[in-house]
Structures are given as C-alpha cells and as structure tokens.
Figure 1 (cartoon, rainbow, N blue to C red):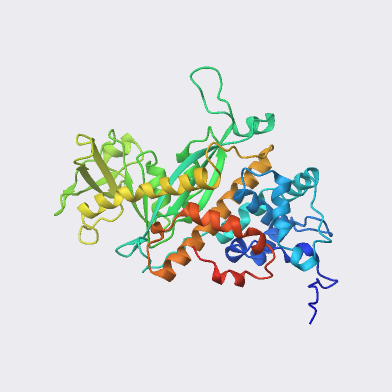
Figure 2 (spheres, one colour):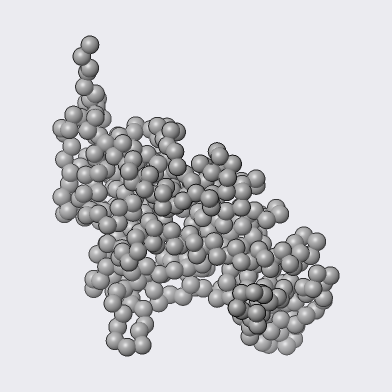
Length: 407
C-alpha cells in the first residue's frame, strides 16, 4: 500500500511546527509567547521568521557557535523535510536573519530566562544539599565580544598595562545550583562594572532554604544585608584586613562577631549585624600558611559545625566548573560572541544561558532516572548528543518524543 506524504494543514505555517526538542522540553513555546507578549515583541503579521522562531534560532546559535548563521537556520529547518517533502521551506538570508534578530531584541530573551531558569534539584537529589539547605554559589566571569565601535562604546575594553586590549568584553555574574550546575539569576554588563556591583542584580534569585557560598571578593556590609534579607543563609569568605572582634567563643572553635557599616559604628558598637566567624588553615595543599576566614548567618554550631562548613566552603568551585562549561565547552574555547551590536550581544548572552540550562536540566533528569550524581555525566557528551539529534528534534510537534534520548 502506497504511503501518503505527510503535509501540513493549510492554516498551519511551517514555522509553527519548529521545536528544538531538548530545548523546547525545558523552554516551552507557551513561555516564550508569554515573554513576547509581556515585552511587546510578539509578531504582528506573518513573517518568514516570526518572533518565537527567532527565540529558538538564538538558542540554536548557542549550540553551534562555530557555524555560520544561515547554516544554523538551515539545520533548524532540516527536520521539517519529512513534513514537506523538501518543498516550501525557504531559509532567510543573512540580512533577513539580522533584521529578525533586531526586531526581537534582547528583553524577550531575558524575560524567557527569568521565567524558565531556576534550581531544579530536590531535597533528595545527590550532591545538591547540605543538611536542610540547597547549596548555591555566586561568581562572575567575562566574555569577549565582536570588535565593533558599538560594542566597544557600550561594553568597553578591559584595562591593559600597555596599549589597548584586543576585544571589548562583557561581565556576567550568576548563581549556580551546586548539585546540578544550573546557572540562575544571571545578569550582564560592561566589563568595567565590578562583580560586586553586578551581584546586586543577581541576589534576588536567592530563596529561603538556600545556603549561598561566595569568595572574599564579594562581602560588604550592604551586600551581606541585601543577601541575608532574601531569607537564604550565607557562607562567605572575607578579606584578611576585615576586623572581626570575637564577642563570644563557641564550642566548636568558631566565634560570634559583628559587622558594621562604618568605622564610626564599630567604635560605638551600634547597628551591628551578628555573624559567626570560622577560621582555619588547609594542610597538604601548598597553602599551609594561608588562613581562611568565613562568616555565616548560621549562628548555632549544633545546626552546622565549623569543621563541616569549612569543608563545605570549597564546593564554591562548582561555579567555576559551570562557567567553564558555558565558556569552553558550549561556546567553544577562544570563540568570541558573534553579535555586532550591543542589543544582539545581550540577546546572544541570554540565549547561551538558556541553552546551558536546557542541557543541564536534561542531564539532571537523566541522572535522577539512573540514581547517580549529575557530576558523573559528561557535559560535552550531552552537547554532542543534542547537536547530533537537532535535525530530528526540529521536526517534533511536541517535546514528548525526547523520552527515548539516552545520555
């Protein structure tokens, strides 16, 4: 019996059927439509590249950083051939792609990111929690962007001791869910903006029940107050020059001290914020003489002993690994963000963050199914699987077809 060629109904456009499989599973079309509506960027008329398709296209760009933009779009449409017999699909040219991305702008991408990206681990997830707390860390990094006058004016170049730096850069700060490497709450700015300043826009993503780890670059009286006001607990390293007078020595060797907004407040012991101080030195690391000083909002040793918090602090390096995944394995080593204008750089950045989330969420789901720690799965292998299956994923009318994907 002859097969009937699959066709689309007359009222359905080819672009309405585009789904990036693994990406749409965690970044659904409905959420994109909500973000487009909220930012006033939904398509007002039929286009070859309507707004929701451009969102998915920006995500595909993050998967194929080394591939020419029109070729990425061709890959995105490749999976639709079984629906159309290869006819009826017209890939936009570079100019059309650029115009479509410009119409979309960056605010819908940020809106989608804020709606979708969140911690995914549960209380029983392996490697995600300490005691009752879900572990998170905060840190930042820089990304090279295309060397255009517009990008240089908007984001600046890093300072150089001689001459000028080769490329403009953006700076990004994010929180990471330690157990899954999901980067959430991320914000970006020009490279001359300090991480501590940019962190103020990130801390809103902390929630009660989290324990946030941070390096000594971040602590200040105001930032500590903003972070603790979220209801999350904190475990931050502080610089050596900080004066932390011991008010009460505790049973585990830690002590109670107070933070002050100014030297005047400290002298008069007014408006102080109580913290617990933990001091220790590492052995067998080559840094035996370096003293680590941590401060925490967890004031009672019976809730979290000093020795355990000291060991726990070094899990802060999980965010370094997550940022390495983003910059080296997904973006590609030494690859510059391709966008030529500041708005499209911002758009590309949030596309990169969303794609990283989708991959990490898929890895967490696979790890949970097999009852293993997500750290045992290879991020790069997962990226290869997603890239390899993208043409077939692109034809999926729903993400349910992903149930068979093996990592």
